Image (cartoon, rainbow, N blue to C red):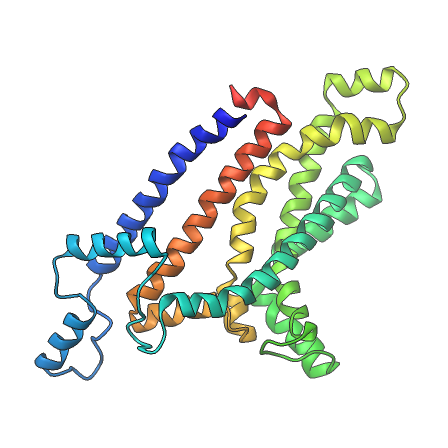
Length: 305
């Protein structure tokens, strides 16, 4: 297992470095710049700003300085639009918000999605299965930019139970979590159901039932573990997607998460903030894909070879 992890790390580190290089080149190849506004700045002012942020240096020098800053100090540099804030400051302010509602939403998605999928598979071709599939399809076809205004309309304007935006105590968490969770929960339920049905029809399950094992023992000991393999492969990227926030959720509910920061930085051409958030998402994606590979190898030893 240790050798398996080392091999995955040997691939993950160059992948992250390649992500940084490609993102840096693409960001600086885009037309315009952070100081290109509707009202043009005087050439001397523009030259002074470029010199302050090192934008007057060759691209390869800028890239090397940027990579060294990340590797040695974990420093993503200053924000071009907000001179009093660094990229680290912006991420440290927004990421805890998205991490909070993203982690809770992920936990609820996995918990209810797996339970719904298992129940639907066990009660295959019954009204319970039909109801579970119907709920899953209904939740999956409603994107969060449709669910969000419906939640505000019902719980804020009609019932007046929950605040319609902002971030604070738990009442502010409810609607962003629901908007982020429903469609992902439905996807997990459908994936779990199809995987469980496939496993329940396999030879080793028929053998276990022929031995006289109870249905509970068959499900828990012999069916659940192999049925979770496709689900686990889906959960790695899903976790990154949810804890790094949803642009729709951050924008609609004004949570102050990094999704809003990413949109603002794109509109204002703040390359430093866009790079910092891109690298954060990329690093988390690589890490959790590595974690999924390790879980795969632990569940199914054949994967190690």
